[in-house]
Length: 202
Image (cartoon, rainbow, N blue to C red; front, side, top):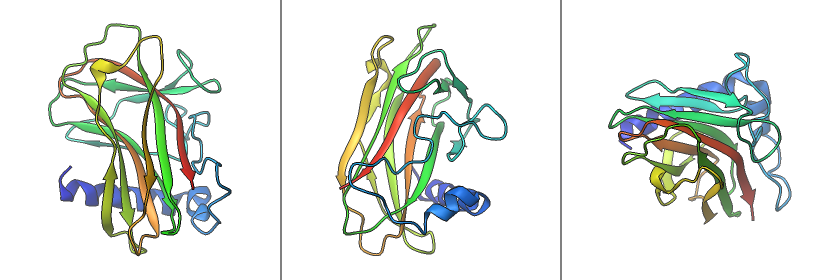
């Protein structure tokens, strides 16, 4: 993604953190025990004020509009998952992000589970990717880590597929990180379900 897009996402996240007492307050807490999921609302059980989107996550779109909703149609954990609609517009990217405090002495694992909806689905050249932006105390991006690209054509209607990136080392000076799930439709049509987002500290 272009650098100007990265700066836009950072601004969105910092604004959201400032406006949410729960999320902003977490940055002052310890990072939790090894093996504990650091994410708030990791399985999208808690809705935001609209009732349609997950609380404690930032939803974004570049060159288009994000069309997402909480659903009980197909779930891996709990009673809800997040449905992300793919629109056939090339160059468009939509996603969700969570900002968490990090420490350079730890290593981090980041993963999500995805599957395609059983209704009509055309994968196009679309894909999903995990992106972690490492930020200093002022919100400036220091570096980023990316997972492999998971083609939408590889998603199943019956089984959840795990996408992960492991043992991430924050760069020196990193204080926070944007843990993001990005969807690049690239001509795709239909919905993708997302559930069980996990950030673990080692």
